[in-house]
Length: 329
Image (cartoon, rainbow, N blue to C red; front, side):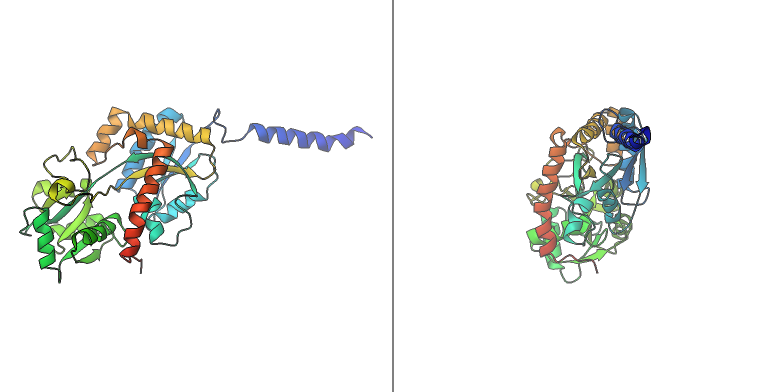
């Protein structure tokens, strides 16, 4: 048998050895090229802003650029679906939120499973909601607002950021807890809904703190409570729902970081280390505070913390969405 018979085997052995040494997901090498962070909304919104602040700080730890890519559509589910079907190598990540990874699955037929198609990395930001109304509603507190809504159930209306948005879901739960009835008026986002609240075209909203607080401060709308267990540091004069007479009505528009299912654990750990370092940075915390975002508790800044929190949020919100018959037309 001549040397030519051994040559193909030699080539095959060389290729196998080369492939084995070039795996992009090995933690001792990772990352060796830029990382893409997918955001399911257009540039400029709160999700995009959070992603860009986080990416800027994470890349200092990771030693590679973290590039934010906006993939809007279908309540951010298109972007999340892209990450779910990306190679599990740590180079395509999702900056998702309560909508993409909790609420949407109770409303849409999604191209992904929010629990089983991702590897959790960490909760990265939380943002309570404010219960607000147009300024000329006579109610002085939350109890009086609930009474006013019951007395005006034939024409009262809540503005929402769209069908199935966190503001819509919060309103559905509020109705269940208070026995109130009012119409939902969907808008293409919270910003135009807030504009109509200021103009007096709708009566109330459940809105992200960062969006509504400037209008509250300007006196163009009224605030009744924050949907959190503790008063918000940026607005300590606004009571919690527990203090205002509606205990347990808690809702946070929170954001998390996920990788595709099957991403190696040591890669997840490197990403988590970068997130934890970023969230401990005073500069990042200050920038988050400026846009109304809180840094989550340390126990949620772990893969296990995000997984547990997401599961508990699904158990809370799916029954509410389904019992309210929230559907996209």
